[in-house]
Image 1: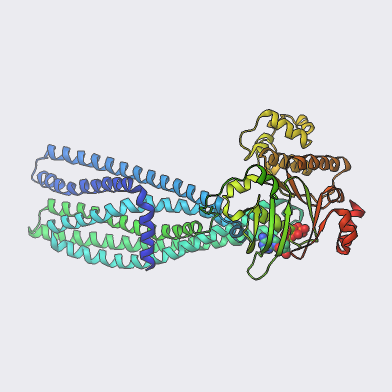
Image 2 (image 1 turned 135 degrees about the horizontal axis):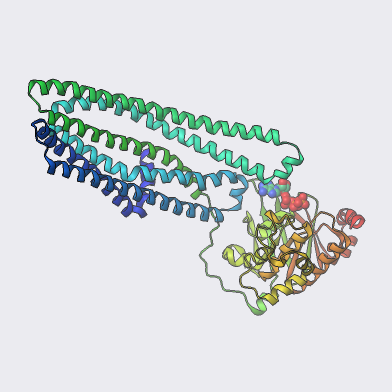
Length: 578
Ligand SMILES: Nc1ncnc2c1ncn2[C@@H]1O[C@H](COP(=O)(O)OP(=O)(O)OP(=O)(O)O)[C@@H](O)[C@H]1O
């Protein structure tokens, strides 16, 4: 059953490349057939030479056949390699495209490094499968049948001896091939784990250095590398085992043919030319047998990789519902809140709700501040507002429309997100500002830079907007990164910006710049802020108190100070340090 599924997967994969696979198979076959005619000519040449005259036209034809065979095989190999490369490229595109759309809940659990290994390593294994197996295997089967036919025609008795010897090694090899598949899957999984470990360590290299855990991490990587080594070694052992078995069968067969043949030539039952022709034809038997084994081995290995790729392609992706939704325009857009949570329940794990019936609205202008103790669910509210996750119950509405029925791209175009650590991509400052923004005029860019207080920053950089920001924007300060992230959001012209305020202390100047920026922004679009600073809470038109996955209070700062003892307690540190 599993075998059937494997061949089905393979044939589905090969469907789009049928022409080049068949072309390569035809060329390989042509090479094999050209090879098979050589023993017949060799027999005439050797018998002629034994009789005392060299038949030059036959020798010329034989040389021509050698050249034609070599050319056909070279072309076949190139075509196979090209098909393998094309297929790998297409598979990588498909896997990468799929990974970019995979649901975030899946990525929360999955090991990113392992997914990278599958997208890069396993797709390359599949290439080997294609390059080695499909075309060659097909040609090998036909070539084997033709070689057996020729040998039977030359001498059926000698062939019987050969078949017995080859048959034994065939059985032994089949047993090995099955184990190779399992070992290959283990090796790929171990390799995925190693890449995942490396990705984790390099991603947190500053933490590793600061905690002086290089030795510990090196040990872990050693262990993972050791697992890959062992799995590959086991596979190599099995492949190596099959080699001598094959060689033994081939040597035995040759010896038997030469000994039996020599006595038959001596007794006059066979000419020397016939024995040479048979021996030559036998060498052409070994090649297809080898090709078939290689193909079966490659299919076993490749199907392990294909299985891992199929697992990635089976991961659920964000899919737009096919419901026509009219754009909300004009008055309706102005009247409806830009964002509404209506009795939203959500948990990362089944039966463990983090949000327990959250409800609030965000008007189309002004600032709404979210405050609450650590772990209350503030970031989770942002994650649902961005539709990184879907609510388990209740609904999120954008301009009064249920978010579930809006295309993801359209929904997210309306909502900008500025995370606390404001990750930037490597590239120039301009690249980062315009990332995902669409066409932007230089006037607009200047206006946003002024609004976010970035003009002096840009002026101070060696190449202005074209200065590289370094990996994750490390050449910029935390505050500057935050403002670049805000500017990037603004350039995409969203209706609402979600901003997770930095917890780190800002100097008074930076804090004033940020407060002024937020004030200006809230005049052009709605702003929802996870607030860590008294100044932010104070200037918000509305404050939402989130506690234990519920909104437990709502109003202005002053109203809440009067009405909510809990808020008073919560705001005390803000009042003290803000
Ligand atoms: N990706 C996740 N997978 C599983 N649980 C999560 C995940 N993210 C958050 N949680 C859990 O959900 C709860 C709410 O977390 P959340 O980050 O929303 O709180 P928060 O109010 O933003 O906290 P803080 O102010 O400390 O950032 C916490 O118990 C947290 O452990």
